Structure formats: structure tokens, C-alpha cells
Length: 137
Length: 282
Image (tube, rainbow over the protein chains, first blue to last red):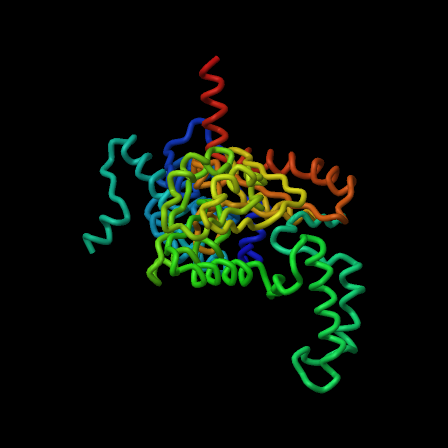
């Protein structure tokens, strides 16, 4: 078993915000069971803020802990703020991740971003992914 | 909390009789068996006595028994030794796709040294395909190394039939492994490492062939060779028993595991999809 930080173990043993949101404003799915991990994020948006964030995850201890912490970090944030949750920030918030588990933190941030994209596209608003933002400077 | 160790393929405690027999040599009786002085006498006698007893058990001559430090070392010595001894006769080695890494990696090393190696596929149960094995054997085949029993999925090969294929062809068979209590499962929709971590928090040690539990993040080569779909291989869970495990131990596992499976399934988007599909199908 990899050596996980206390924070990872806490979020793995007691994951926050597990579940689905029936009438979600946006849903984002990232990864697939073939590559190992899969995460689905559900968001509710109120006044451009994430009023609720829930997730379901198929994956290892790190994948579950990442999903849990991302849901906590994102709750209450504006969409713009939530976009700024990077894999590096997620790993930092979890007091570090083993090297071979870093891809889990990518999945978490990406799944949340996809949920925001989904919300925006349902609203008929332009979807500006983080990648495009970077490209545009 | 009860502690139940069910990962005996990884490592297992010494049998108390072995501990008892070894203690004098670990504590008081030291010396190099090769030495001329008499410190070497007692260790030499002990080793030769053990060699003779083992030879008697398997019906060989004592000088045919060679002690090594590990299974990996034994496989290397056997296959490299045979290959080098018979290279005048041929340079082809046959293994199966579910051998230990010590054999698979060794075959690759031998290929770099001018030998040829064929890996014979297995079926969905992990059984070596005998027709494929027959086809793989060539004029220049010198060694066929196929494990008798697989420590990960518990498959026992039809070693008699395999031996028949090799008989009279000057090929040396190298059957590896025998099998203790082995229970291998795939628990759909959840992942192995998460199961192991929760089991461990309840005092139970097991193992898994899931990609996430391996350093290289690759699913078990045994499950892959059996063409188990990757998402099912991810859910592998393996219990390997030892003589000290009790019925109470197993009952404790049977009590502990279902809530863990349930807990992870409640978290799993795959399980949610499965349930939806099932409901839709009705």
C-alpha cells in the first residue's frame, strides 16, 4: 500500500460530499474504468456560486480522497474561483500524494471543470476551459 | 480488534518447527561450512543432513539438490543453468504468459543473449492452452518452464499432459510452485486498493492484482493474460491462507467484507450506472 498522508487517509476513510445531485445544474465525468479511475462530479449553481458539489468515484484510496477534497475546496466558490483549483493545489491541500498517484489529482480537477463546462453549455454560455484560458494567456 | 493475516503469498511466518530447528544455527552454531577449521563442521553437517532428507523426500540424489536464497534466485539458476548447459543442442525457451516475473523477465534477458523465447497463452481460467504449447515446441527447444500452480488465481496446470508433450524430445521441464489455500475474487464496480485499505483498517491483510496497487500502475499480468477486462481486473481481491488461520478468522472476514463492498459501491459511479441499467431493463 502506498504511504498516504493523514489528510489523505482522513478523506479516504470519511469522504465528504459522496453522492449524486438529482437535479444537478452540471455533471462532469473524467477518466474511465479501463485506465483505472473514474470520477463523476455533480454541481448546483446559485448566483454564479457552487452551492452544492457532490461526487461518485471508482478508484483507489487517492482517487477517493482527491474527489472528497476537491468537493470541499469547490463548495461555496464562484465558478471563476473553482476553475483555479489545480491538481497541484489539490495535492498540496492533501499534504502531498505519492508520485505514482499524481494523476488522481488531475482527474479530480478535470472532472470538476467538466461539470462547470456542462453547466455553462446548458446555460447557453460560452464554455471557456482552463486549457483555453492558459492558451489565451 | 481481531487481526487476520491472509496475504501469505507475499510472505508467510515460519513454521514453529522450522524456527525451532534453525534457532541453534542463528544463535550459537556459526561457521562457514567450507572452512577447514572445525567451526565449519557443525553447519556443514546440518546442511548435508538437510540435503539428504530433502533428496529422500523427492527421490533424488543429495548432490542434485542446490540451496538458494529465494524463489527468484532458484528460477534464475534453473533456467539460465539449463539454457547454458544445453545451448549446443538448441536455443529456444518456452514459458507461459502467467509465469512469475522472475521467469518472464528472465526469458526477456535470455532473448537479449541470443536465445529465443515463446510465451504460451492461457485460457480464461488461466490454463495453458495445450495445443498452443504443442505448436510452440520446436526442434531447438531446450527448456519449457510452466508453473504447476498459479499463486494469484489458483489455477493448477495439467502438468502430466504437459510432461507427455515433452517426453522423449530431450526437453527439460521446469515446473514451479505448489499451492496453499488460495481464494481469488473480482468484486465488480469497486477497486482493489480501496478494498485493501478498508480491510486493513479492520485488521485484515489481503492483496490485489489491481493496477492501482502496483508501483507501475499496471494490472496483474496474470489477469491480463486470462483476458479479464481491465475494469474487472481493477476489482481483484486475493486471500491466501496459512496453517494458523482459524475458522473464526474467516468468519470475521465474511462479516467485515460485505459492508466494505457496500460502502465502496455506494461511492462508485459504475455501480450507479449498473443499477440504472438494471432498472431500465425491467
